Length: 510
Image (cartoon, rainbow, N blue to C red; front, top):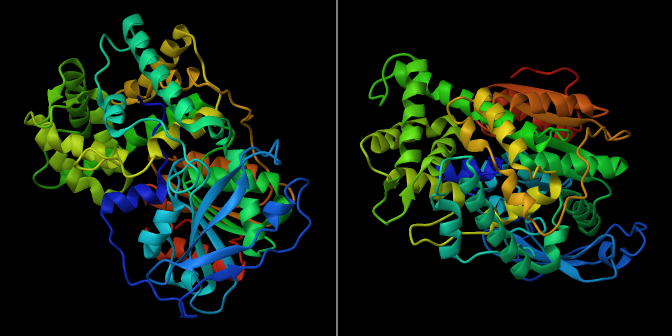
């Protein structure tokens, strides 16, 4: 049930590389027992005084980390009503402390808690660990925070992997997709309740301000990857004078429509696929031959083949076109995944579905036993359904599908008809997509990678130009996001800004 490719950011690459990073420096303060954060004591927005004034109690949770839970209003439009929980983990600064640095890995639906707790060295550099309390948090609706809940594992398997009957885009096919989407939406509504109407990014940005105040920081210091850039930009738009040092890596264009997102992502992954094939054909053991165009035609024929006649895996699940596209996309998040992509193509061309299903499972957070590690799929759909506007008539969907196919002739067809997921949603968006200027904010650093497939470079250019004081840092290369995973030029620009407050005056063109 594809709507748009998950802009998973650092979390996706961490999983892809199977990083098991240790070596975290224990907290210099030492000692067991709780630790407390003193809130800023600032004048809080009306009705939010108790939330902004809450004192967080941190418990040691192993390897130098501390964990806590904050309270936030379920609905900022009615703050006196029910509350929700926000889960946080931090690694206290090991040296000269500047304050807190909140980190978001993307998604929407990615767990910042897990990114910081499990992959601290991947999330941020040693320099940032020295000067900041590195704080990972699960946004509302995600993972350990009060979360979106929809399906059990067997139901999720069916939702993600079942083959939709009929010809793609036909009335019968659309009816089946709509029926499946309606059942999913109904389950989310039944199992989540009122939170489902309050998981929009604006509400999450208001949570950020609340967390800033409870952590005792007068301004927000923030590192957002992928979708996390939209969360950070939204924060800056709402609270420009409370913005401290914000870095937005792998940017999303706030003004992009749902169709814009799908077209640019389809083009981005198609370009990344071409780059992989060029590299593959130049080496040895490539499963393709001829020119890049020849290889692209082979991939297209393979997708058409499994779409018409899905391949059965050893566990009984079927590999169709939608799942194969997911399996192709997953290794394209990082150039280091290209050798594994060759192995996957070899296996599918030989008639085996298992490795492709495994890649799709890793993308979807499914383990070998059929369990899902988190609720990232549910949260992804829930947040996006509240953040964008969607079309509901079949004629417009078919017209948009043609645009996607023209923009990306190999994989674009599989990016169409995603609006079905959200046209059946029980709540409608209150968001108005448009440029974010954050007038009055200090400089905001935007990092963009020239061949980023999930958040194409044009979005970083767009966001940097929209912001009243956006500073673009360009990484010329492949893969999704650049900080702490590309080169010293990018790392130095980001670290210098976050530590010294010195933003680049011109794009260093890394």
